[in-house]
Image (cartoon, rainbow, N blue to C red):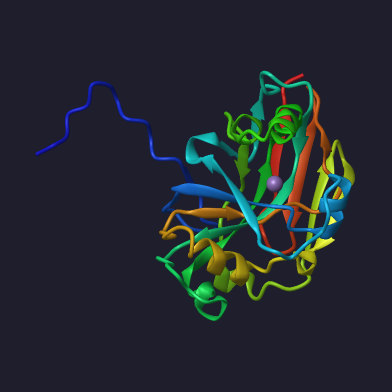
Length: 231
Ligand code: MN
């Protein structure tokens, strides 16, 4: 029996898998806060290893690489944050870091678009970050490269260029919490399932975009992510 809906249900958000036809269906997007020491410092925060913390974006925030988008509404200070993204391909529940990589399908480049002014108000008033982080086109994602094709996570450079100028660059080994540690920790808060994606934090050098801005970022071994803001 086919289901009957009062209106057409939304399309399943999905991103390409490099070199393959079938798509990676996007489920939830988890984002790690302050995972590079130099970025924590530039945001005026202390660096600590007490525990990673998270916020989320809905999969409906997906913006495909190569898009031309409008400057976001309700902000005067929209920032780019270049991120190494981990695509989950198997269930992970209460896993140790040693077993965590079994849950990984692959990796992608992503930009965590942030309405910094709204996030700043939320931080000040101890309100949730949603309006600063979870809005249309706020998760710009490139295609997923399978983990076997990428190889081990080491000192690959993550970088971003704004209008052709390199503004962010750091080795992935600068992450305070490693990918297995993040998956393990998240798997104790949620049951991670295929389609979930983790944005693992941004290195130093975040900054504001403007109408007409062009962003291009990548991680050695991954397909770059690109976006342009309508002038
Ligand atoms: Mn971020």
